[in-house]
Image 1 (cartoon, rainbow, N blue to C red):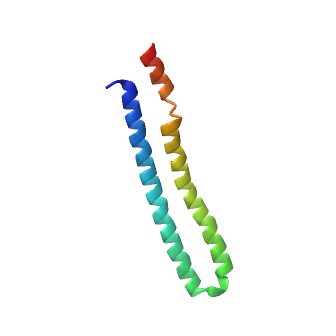
Image 2 (cartoon, rainbow, N blue to C red):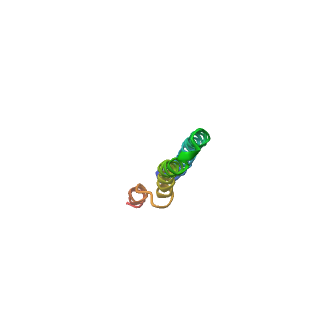
Image 3 (cartoon, helix red, strand yellow):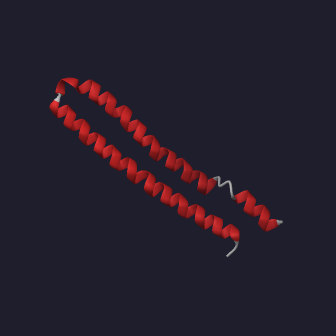
Length: 92
């Protein structure tokens, strides 16, 4: 198999692992944050506005990790910076 084929295979496998790991960890984190927020709401219902606002900001921060992993995987699949090097090596 040529080096260009290996770059393609490794890029696709790496993109898959990036999405797998990058979506599992934020999902667990979001679940834990939601469980703690619901526990806090049960103990202090008067502070619902503050707890909810803080929860949504925290969930947005956690979700940004999954979005960054998605962007990295799309770059690896569609705009791989190594493709041009190996195409030039194969053609030259």
